[in-house]
Image 1 (cartoon, rainbow, N blue to C red):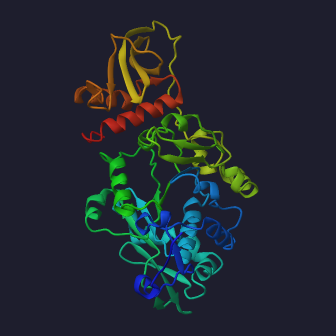
Image 2 (cartoon, helix red, strand yellow; image 1 turned 180 degrees about the horizontal axis):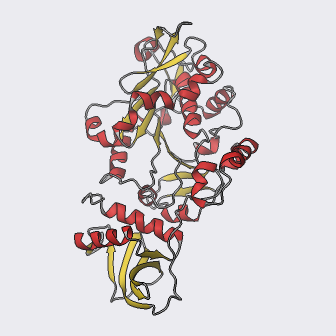
Image 3 (tube, rainbow, N blue to C red; image 1 turned 135 degrees about the horizontal axis):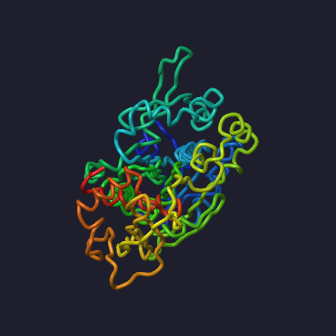
Length: 420
């Protein structure tokens, strides 16, 4: 490959990457840096990250441009990836592009919490290693993180002039389109992309793709990391990434290299908290969270998907009669649920069941305006009726998962109307 000697003072200001000579993909600078992953992982290992925290591994990044990491809380996924990106910055000058869904999530108080583990670990040991002793702390300014040197009184006496992390939000993607420039932004992190019960913005996934396009431009060297703590398997992003069916079948510890119908590869991992911190986590859970409740998976790190306990269908109730059962919802591509209007001794209620077959007499609803004649729930009146039934606890489900699917669909159908 053709090497290019970079002008460090001109391109990097006061920062001098350890790799003095850059190699490019296909000898073409416009395609981006051809990273020496063996070198990066060797140097990353030298940071001495404790075993009880998440650790980036080669298979997370070598075989695909996307990594989707799902887990319970307290595993240090974000910290692990930030340290990995900071090592890339030290070696190559690569800037981490850190994304959240809204700009409100990038406040100064939140930002310093994001890097608190890195700042506090062994009196700034990570920072000293990553800057060859030049700096000992981090400061946040105008949605970017910089290294700094503080004296014994906590006063900043020196600052780096180039950030190692720059922060963006999905709701501001239009603002970035014409003005944002990140030629070294080759590690992109979308953090907390699953927020259970949240209303996702209209075309939020497209906003994410627009941010990626703005950052990456025409390079082929960028890697995208998507991280989530709240582990619910019904989420808009999974469907958009074409991994909805795969994710629903995953259990803790599962890993899959997936390829989309158009060829984009994703490495999807459901991280097993028990592998990362076992004895310590077990003792903590026994002291405080030893309750038999599947909704606590995101707290304890034990179990699979976090599910809410649904009111279940009782098919043996007295006087039970199915009045009407012709509404079918396509909640994901070729995946359906059926709504049944039922009367029993307690009155009228709705039942949500699995649907493996549709009929000509069915009314098919969905969220594709081209494919589905009845968008969402067909009408605002129908949608409000179902919301009222949900509030009044007159909707029953075949399984806990069906409740999550129905609630997620209800949230998505209300995105434009904002009925919630």
